[in-house]
Amino acid sequence: MSTEVFVHVRKTGKALIMDTASDGRSWSVAGTPRTISFGMTLVMAIACGVAAANIYYNQPMIGIMEAAFPGQVSVVGLVPTATQLGFAAGLLLLVPLGDRFERRRLILIQFAALALALAAAALAPDAWALVVASALVGVTSSVAQQIVPFAAELAEPGRRGATIGIVMSGLLCGILFGRALAGAVGDHYGWRAMFWLGLLLAVAVGSLLAAVLPRTQPKTHERYGALLKSLAMLWREEPDLRRATIIQGCLFGSFSALWTILALQLDARYHLSAEIAGLFGIVGAVGVLFAPVAGKIADRSGPHTVIGLGSVIMLTSWVVFEVWGMIAGLIVGVVLLDFGEQGALISNQHVIYALRPDARNRLNTIFMGGMFVGGAVGSAGASFAWQFAGWIAVCTFGAALVAIALALHACGRVAEKRLG
Image 1 (cartoon, one colour):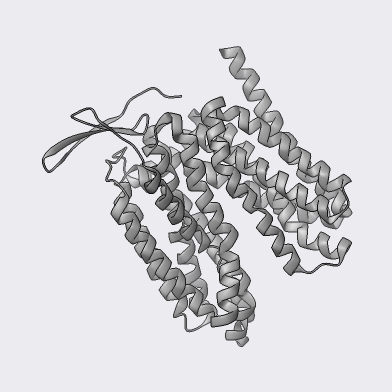
Image 2 (cartoon, one colour):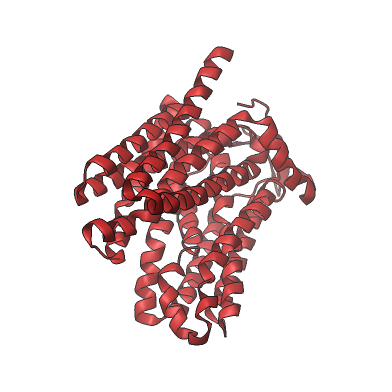
């Protein structure tokens, strides 16, 4: 972990404040530490959830939107893809700006842009306008990944894992309940109402953030092009970043493999509907509860312990899926898979945010980008495995991804002990 201390001094009216970005704490001239409060952490968690939920609003409303544009059904089908691609673009092109510009202002601007994008979606006169607006919603929703490294910066080193866990809990709640909220609102009031509600939530959360977020100094003065080029440099120079990204990519790929095939398995084996498959998502709430716990364990015992434990738990879940051929087995497996994946995610974030305090947003861009690439590979691989040999092949594929992650983690630990 880098021990270099980055000190920024700014004048704030009558007081002179020094921000030390190396450990996430701020010190005034009087020597009083200023750290993130629980209230501020909670607001940031809520903001993350509201931002992330926007990516998933359209998924349960596709049928309703197709009915609204009967002659453009195939175009409406592009809405979820456009949203996801927009989010990926925001992750790559906007999140690195958090290292270059004052984070509070950047987050508030992005929430304002998100509100405008949601208004454009709600007012879309045709399907193509909805696709474009959905892409903009995805781009601006990447503000969630501006907030997470900001929280990591503000937290004390001994509480960084717990803070990340709480903020990620909010993000996970947004992902978990965003679809359910959109489905209910869409059914009762129409799909446009959901986007208007999303706009109100974005404005409300933006107002809360404006009230509680502190102002900070940029961590670098590099030009935008140099920021993007530095992504490749960080990948080359930080082996811990590479390892954490690949490990999490494999684990998220395994996680995505299950959710890609679960509805098909429930229909083929148990003759249950896709609606029942959706209810399994509620089981994912245990991951929300486990995220802060995993962060606290990472603070006490070190993140590498939790990464290894999480991987073992996920491997166990795939064994349960294969040998326990009942609905109860699926429920237990989902709980274990979610516990393991969320624990490893929080702990890998703990690792990368400690590497370069001046580049936390860019580290987050690389890490989350690799994670979503892993998720795409997991979904595609699971679909191929299902067509090739059914559920057994899917379980084997999901377990293999976890085994790769566990092997990489073990090799990294052995190498560190040799160097130590």
